[in-house]
Image 1: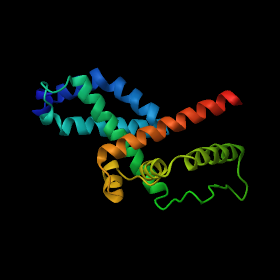
Image 2: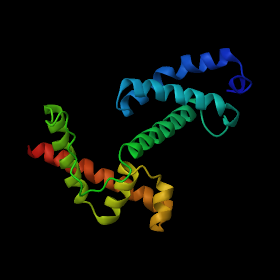
Image 3: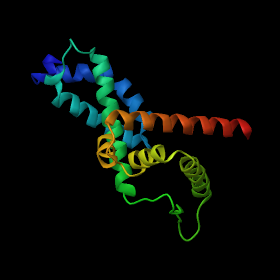
Image 4: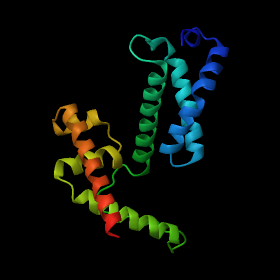
Length: 178
């Protein structure tokens, strides 16, 4: 990373050779399309290059630092894209994309999955529901949510974690029942 910070092109290539597959795998799992994953990988390596001088080997292994930076960039990218899609989304709205006046089968299945997810979210306790919808549907950061709700950041993080766990549990239970 010292060589990357000094602007050595070979060092950036070595960094990509060493971590490119890992970063791409993470991006491919989180991004909606492979082209989004490609763009995200490029963003991550640009960020690695620009922040190379901030890497401190005494605080974390290089692989840990790369994974954390990658995850942070991917989450930020997902939040930005979700915020652009529908910034003023409310739970009461019906989500029904139509193509040519008639929804294709894939859209019908997406509508059903989305409706099921929204029912699960509606069943969450109020704080969990609020934090989850603001973070994932409205694209707010956890810090923003904490400030808006006048709650500590740690409370917001644990509330979101519990909400996601509860959604996973409900999904697993419903999958077993069907």
